[in-house]
Image (cartoon, rainbow, N blue to C red; front, side, top):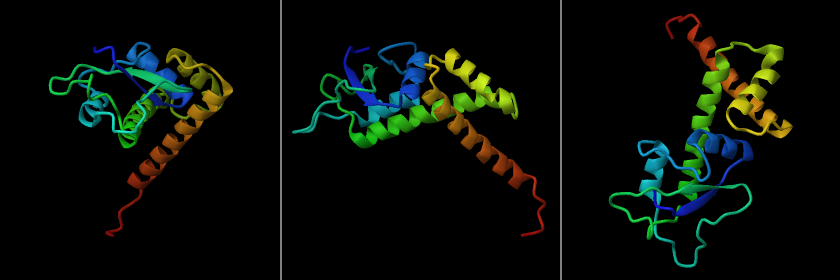
Length: 160
């Protein structure tokens, strides 16, 4: 690793999850990960008149890896659109992780609250009501999309 950091703003629960999942603070993405590829592709020189990706409230530090063909001492700025792509990638991985772990319980009904809080604890997310409601909503949306897809697959085909 280079020791050079950039900072991106994430929702608190997502920041806690990714730091736990990646093993600490600062975040160090695996060399074969999509996040690593986004950094390698989109890091640029700091544009004239721009502010570097600095620390701030709800921002997580990401340590830039060494790239064979890109010197991060020079190319260490992640433009806003690339930051958004990185955030979406992290969030998508989060949703997959949440879904895979919780969906195995099927329709979890009244025990959902306990399962979500247990999942938060197991993944380094502070068990606050705000975090719980955010994760609950994400899970509900995913479950509803899954149900709609399953319903479509089970409809009879009348030759249309």
